[in-house]
Image (cartoon, rainbow, N blue to C red; front, side, top):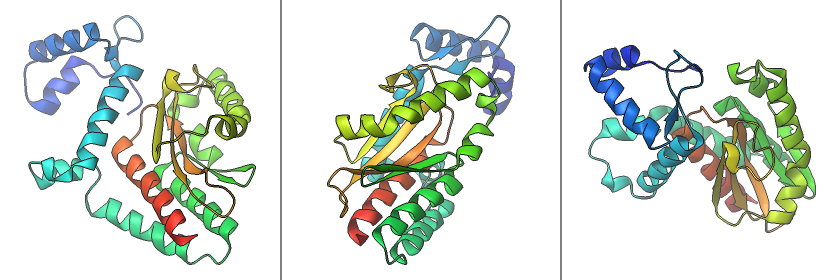
Length: 230
């Protein structure tokens, strides 16, 4: 849910005392991993908190044998639903006869499957899909947030062309975004080779609050499928 979480809610969820939760939350707050948006509110993860979580996901996805149980694997997006989503991506993308159609299909499907804004580069152009999905999320009820995201999108294509993020999967969380630092969104993109460029990109833009495990997996697979197909 897109709202601060209090100790009482977490105590019920994990079946421990509120005092225990408050002590742990205080420690996390000192470490800068969670914050209180305003007096008497619960806590929300900070950009640093999300970064810590994403780094742990990256390690676990790269070393799947480290999981101790199938329950943990499903929690990180390795259950049947993500497998179906990856299969659907592969079928839809590989069925396209034209390169630009394949990239557009991948972008459209990422927007549909993640609820975020999908994006992809086709030559020197940036193709976007799912803007209404992105702005329908509760984080963007404030018009100033929408304007910040719009400015980021205006500058995203030239930034990608100039910066050329080099990793197969690139994740920029909140203030880590080189443009639109105050927009409160995360950019998750995968680099792949295409007939248009050796530095083509496919990915999503969404609020910092999102299902990183599944989104990272889908974006990574979309990039791999496009490179292998094209």
